[in-house]
Length: 368
Image 1 (cartoon, rainbow, N blue to C red):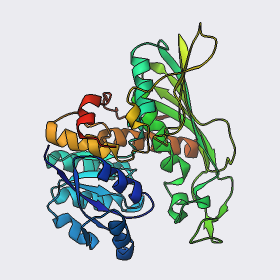
Image 2 (image 1 turned 60 degrees about the vertical axis):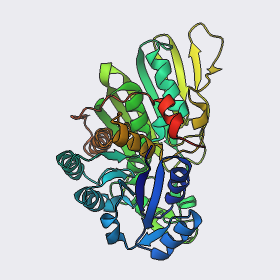
Image 3 (image 1 turned 90 degrees about the vertical axis):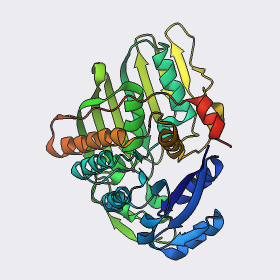
């Protein structure tokens, strides 16, 4: 298959794993990378043998198929729009944009120009969550009726090199790690219909422990403990809790309850965390389920870009799509509105149906 030419815009904390994996995937030619900090871009380019480093505004003029946007969230709308206006397919880190109106504009522009939009997170493409979806489809737990998801930890100021933006407006754990919860749950259970939520700012200031900003304080603008009740399609009831305030917990990941059994799915924030466990009502205990694509048991952030490349070349389904990201973004805003206004909030959009990965096709182009 002809190589897919890619440029990476943004060389911050998440860039190395993306570049590592784009190198591992057999169909990409990484043409260039760029960052507002050109020295950082040069360092990343040297580490991953990227041939060119450009000024950020020059990346849109490149002869590439896909531009990958790894910049901070507040820049997504402006950059995503420029990518599409330049005639390139777009893959962006979460969120798609900062507001629903911006996100809708981006999707409408892509449709007008016949371009594809992909968006993180793509961790729902992991072996664990794909296996869980197959188990549900095949009826191993019967009809699902409820689910829980927890992502709680002590906070990014302990490890992130630049954690300031994560505590600002329309970030916090809801918009930072919430997309992992809701993307996985929507993939497994279907669209969200309505939500109700509560949240709080537990600590009004956070002390940065990580370098290079160790000792600085961050004023917190968003709730750092959020819990939401969620109604999915088919009246499945869910509960999602995300927090930066919980340094120790036994609750991490997803549990899905069906009429004939229970399914435990590892933390959707990762590709390589934990096991898939199943207990049917007549079983003595939980049993580990072998994953359906074991070569994928690794940190493969960027797998959504590979799936997008195949969608471009072969007209196969786009799984980590802008449409899915839009539904998740609307759900996050519904949660935030609910905790602010103390009421139920409806979610109007519908998530697209997302098929399981085509493992035969992936094996032809994935070298790890």
